[in-house]
Image 1 (cartoon, one colour):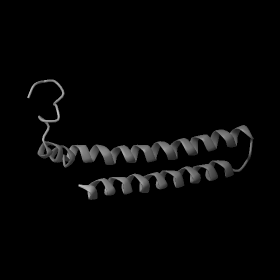
Image 2 (image 1 turned 90 degrees about the vertical axis):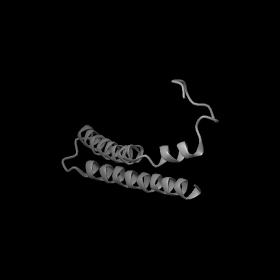
Image 3 (image 1 turned 60 degrees about the vertical axis):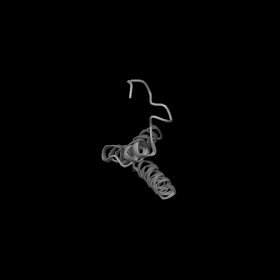
Image 4 (image 1 turned 45 degrees about the horizontal axis):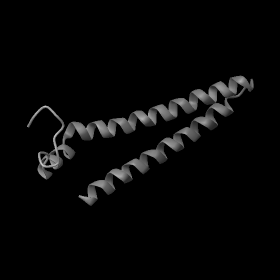
Length: 92
């Protein structure tokens, strides 16, 4: 094969299966999900703290509330992405 992008004929089904079963590719997919979760939760707690400081509330109620909301969204996103991965694997 040349250095150019392979055409449909050059990239066989066997090559496609090897690409999809590649351990580093799977590691990349799952680690990206983890970083998305961390970013979502971190931004939620950080934003909650900023809002809490803006309204000068003595207790950290907004920090905790918005943080837990961010955690819920992160776990919902996790389950949704894992379901999509499982559906893609079952189609093959």
